[in-house]
Image (cartoon, rainbow, N blue to C red):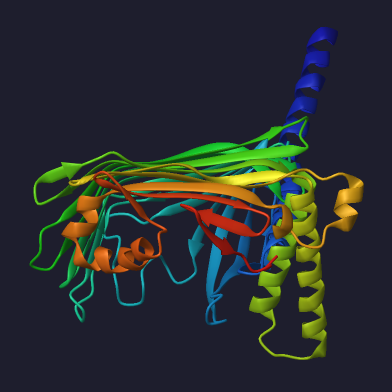
Length: 431
């Protein structure tokens, strides 16, 4: 009997703890929501989250709020109210969001079978998964004749390690946009991205965007189809986390026009040796200037002083970035045309300076060095009159030189002078 009583007491204790866990989870979830809202609002000026009411219960909560999106071009703000039902579990909560006015515009039924679902799943240890599931839909504008049809898709972002790591996934099998003047079809879009916070405003990681095909058909004209589209990006810390290398490669396997296919097409952009601290400072100053331009429409002495301060921070960051040494450019350009291939590359670099050299540095451009080369078929310029008109002045000035059946540009930059095929062009000191 004594043993059974002990087990009964222990079981009752477990039930009490288990019954109280949802309340603890609900409390932590509310704190996490408030913290995430504050961080999102302070990180950028374009999106603002507001919590109007948060009613927390034992097994669940109710949330009402709004999200405002700011148009940086016009300064106008669009506000969308939302509500969410929150379910508390033992180790986390599930927040199910929906717009207060529904997923369709007034008087419209964009999703006749089922509505989209937007959820946020949180855990006590700080991980969160935001997921949007969109069913198939078809919308037609009777006034313009334009229509949009999609197969439905999925977008998900998983955040972990107190917000320092993130993984994103977007899958969209098909999208068709049709109108009186143009039809656009996108097949099998997929995006994957991983991000890891390094320092300040600097993140590292890798990502890939793949699209099976994009077809554009103008009214009463032949379609143009891009097949095998891919964008691959990577950023990694080097030199024990003090430097950053970044690379983005754009590629199209084939471009089909008039039943003829040409490819591949490839362009690579690379940044190498960026000092992390200076790059973070430059990013922060640019964000500050952008925020001032968006949030302060009216002029005034205070705004002018803030803009000048942000400009000064940006200039200092650029000087520090240059003095630390870096390299930026397009190491690979490869375009296939019916007349032949267009190839080229370009690179600009700045050497790392000593403390004395940095103190004597008057301008960034003084020590910039670079090189560029471009080669294209002569037949390409001869076939297209518009292109020939643009290239003719360059050929006349000797900036493009004919070598056999190709036009070639070979340029080097040093000491504020660009040498293009032997023609020297002084550069103005802009930086």
